[in-house]
Image 1 (cartoon, chains in turn blue, brown):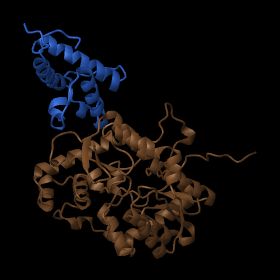
Image 2 (cartoon, rainbow over the protein chains, first blue to last red):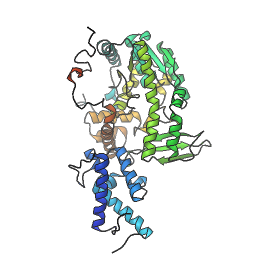
Image 3 (cartoon, each protein chain N blue to C red):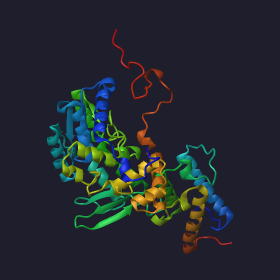
Image 4 (cartoon, rainbow over the protein chains, first blue to last red):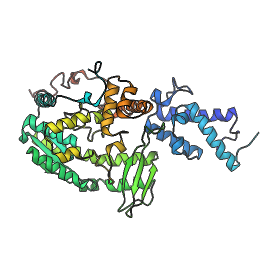
Length: 105
Length: 346
């Protein structure tokens, strides 16, 4: 991880949002982020379809070194920048805690 | 149509004689006025849709103006050919058989497919068989993501969710089959000055269950407006052999036997028909639930999935898109050109 910020801090969550937003804007929107809010539903706005979800999962797994299980592949976890960041925050946090790599404090 | 009638499967009942006559008239009119071709090529799979399409074509044009093409390959079900032979004999149809296997081999289809599967099942190789399946969307709130099911030569079965690259490569490879079949259909259509008939029913057409420029390509799609159960009604009226009418719908695309419902549709087709009809006629989920015997929430989920599939497969329906309009070649309603595309030489 490039970040050396505690996983539970607002700054860490902000970093995650920014990285997810950068991927979404670059990969799905050809650089045009007009109208994309952190809470915009990917499905309802038509930004991401089922293949798009695969692309998002591929990005998250490769960039953050995590494995997303079938049960975790639900809109509650991945349907907006906010939801994805929160999901990732828990996921990465748990992973880093278990590996002892998070700087606490 | 539905305002005064209770929702039931009978709402899908049609006047088969009148429908047959309307389709046959439509085929003749489109060939004469729009396509200007002398007959139809129909790819025969041994399934109900292609059998009914061929029967309608023969009824509309006579058997000499219809060519049935059988195009099996290594992974095709053995009974497919037997069924299409049966239909061809019943219709008095001229048929040709094109073996796809050497063509697909030359395209490295089998090698490409196996390599894609090995991304998730490294031991996949000779003697293995496989298919793609989708989750039962009525049982989960998750995304509809495909998995591969593979069977080893000794019968061991493994299942694995497909990650992005493997999924894309498997779809790209298997699409060779539909596109190669369509290439052959157009070859024969061109040499006979015929047009090509596509065979989708309404479920397939609406939900994008076809390969773009593969089985999605055609000059005319005579049964695309008919729900699957209406196709069965026509099949009975047209006296399609009982064996074909009783056969379970299959994709006949993968080496492991695969039903259409486990691949793409989340319910048995007769129930999917009712859900699509209900959605198209704004019939509430609770009425559908009572008829099908599922929870209302599951019907809502299916309604939602119908919308999702419509949105995600819009690409399949799109023609080549232009940056700027060319009014001289603009299509009129019904598909005709607004002007002669090919002026006579002066």
